Image (cartoon, rainbow, N blue to C red; front, side, top):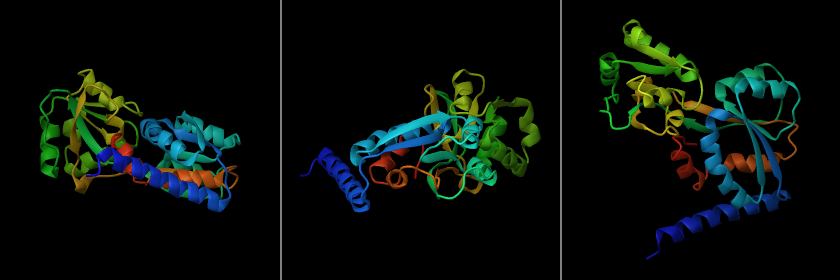
Length: 257
């Protein structure tokens, strides 16, 4: 019988062979890939990059920053091989016209889910009625001032409970772990946020995803500009995010390709 770790080693070897052949076919040697990346997805990116470096021989240098700083650096003409940002932020960056040409790819995504403090009863949020009832029954609820919270405000309006929730709603600042931290600290009973933003927070239990009818995937895009110094190595990294090696690593961080 083939042991599981033997299969895992074989899978890594297969990816390494594929990437090695790809690099050889394009005449690209081991490269140094520079990336500007939205800090919100740092855990997912850091889970994948070491495996990519081992498989490809490339070195990845990443600067994790907020979207406003990322935009400033692009406007200031900072050179890089790839920029990674929330898709709607990328739309705004491209509309500004400072990042032109090249190739754009959607690389990772995550759904919206709920969390409670570790050990607390888990409310049912698996259906539209269940979510509505659980939020109304909760003593307090947290959403984010970021993209998930903006979207969820429209969901609460659709459910007809926005006004009822308003007195007991706490709005967390945008950012990784902001809603989860309120839950851990006991400031709110239920937090609803991007699952990838909840997973890194110790001291909470995930309840599950909000129902499919209300779901919105939080998608992050990569852009390889026309002036990238290592475009082929950057494209190899984009491909690696959807590889058999990367998928389970991303899932541990609440994301998928």
